[in-house]
Length: 421
Picture (cartoon, helix red, strand yellow):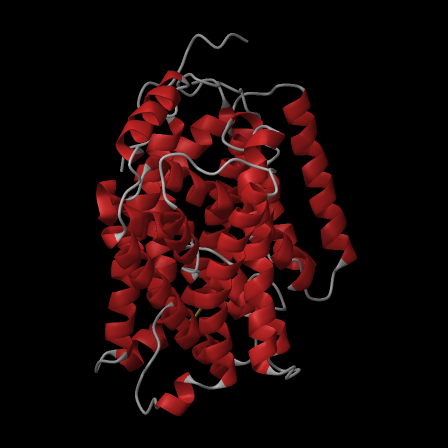
């Protein structure tokens, strides 16, 4: 198979950042709309529609399907499929394709997950009912964060945008692993064996270089269903399935038209960014503030999440960058100041989509705790976004930032990886 045929258009990184920015802005609008509706006379209608039984019953664990379940367990599987496709692309021939490229984002990403979890556990005081929520502030919402950066334009140099995306992608890997390991209920062996069989068939198709998409799409749907039955969260099927889609590496070139992964990514990315993620935000961000007091906001659960996102992320990510640079493990991002790096570290505290998703898993069966979690997620994410954007807007630029940015853009353009927000 030759690689002469290619999908024309902008580079992978430019397209990725543009789609994430648009999706992030729409997510902000959808979340704001959900909050307004949940605190309006339409609140009862909003909650009733989300949780009204629509059927059918796909698994005993979930019971009759509702609009909320279709979004969280169905549409979000497509979101995680796109996450998996992007991770595979980056690991094969993207920004994380070599150990040298992984050194800088890896340590900040890992510390940026561990520190928020520790802060959360410290504040919740070991309450056994709340302990399961430790992973909620560990997540970063890449769409929301890139959307915030898009609003800043040139105030954030390219090197910082690349660092944010790289850290967030590794963060996504960690979040997926956390969901699969820590938020999986009782396992049904028969369904799990069926999932293994489907994976084996998809792997065989991949190894035989079957380049048509439809067999993989059928396999992905079947894999989603048996994973739903198995007790493992169904969205994990999206990530696992993504790694089974054949990929033709095209470093420094437009995407290969005959590459199934490229075609699938092109096909679902607009739907995920412009429909699925905003729909998830609208269905999950609605929280009523009626009767809410300062004592409710400062309760251990919302306070632990907010502090984990706002304080834990900036301390973990920035501390990871400093440690990586000072130890000689990686070089400091070019053309930016330490203050700007600190602001980007704080921007990683926007945990919105992933945090909301994990909170629903962590406190399944405890709707009051899920609502309290939303308050902490919104507070921590908003604080992180506002303060980080103010710092980036007002921070003095490095003396050589413009020169470095032009040089880096030229360098990446030569590799087919230019990004301009």
